[in-house]
Length: 347
Image: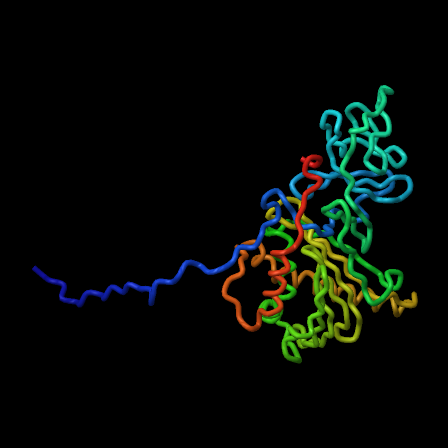
């Protein structure tokens, strides 16, 4: 009887060098934790999505709002449910500058108060909608989570009427809170490692201009393909990124608002601006060429971040010297004011 005399393969078992400690890190407060949300300006839709006399429903925070434009051209954001019996006002209509409920034809004025009932009963003084502080700028409709805004949207170095803005609403939601995307800006390691931005100077941690509701700093660097940039980057609150400055030989202004349609999700709205030309055919051709470049930059940057944002379990873990600005922003986030005055109205 033949016997197999070949040596048996050595079985290798990979063993840990040591027993690691439990995953280090400080959990960050999530949007909606304890029923509260950060008090920030959030985009809810694009201006072009709500025309004169139109209304639309949008998810916001942990409920629903209605966005409408009256005859006066002003866009307003209100809680979506009628205080009579809870009908959804987004299936109603706009009457002059008022919202009319489809169920019993109650109408609500620009302050959210019931102005009239369908059958002529006296409007109850307690029949009120929650009116969000709102504004329309950069081609977007914004709502502030709170009774009064704590701060305003950032300005660019050029006046609004000197810039042509194009506005985008990305089709897919991201699987993390808005502040997670915002935290990429103070994360200078992220700018280098993910977006391949090569700083021409030392990391500008000491040059960051901290304000009550955010920060800004300037980078002098080479973007991908070695394109020179001198950009000012900034974050306002927990939901707005903006940047401006030269990309190669022309100025770009970009503002990204992170919408909050539900806890643990965010939606990206972007306004990209270029300085107006003189109206000549040459200027129009150059504008179109630069639009193609800005479209590429937006798509590439968001694409580089998408898988990271959709899978991250964000917490402040083991940081290094390169995380000085990020560490301060995370402290800013932990101390950021939170509220939810619309809670009884939007759910």
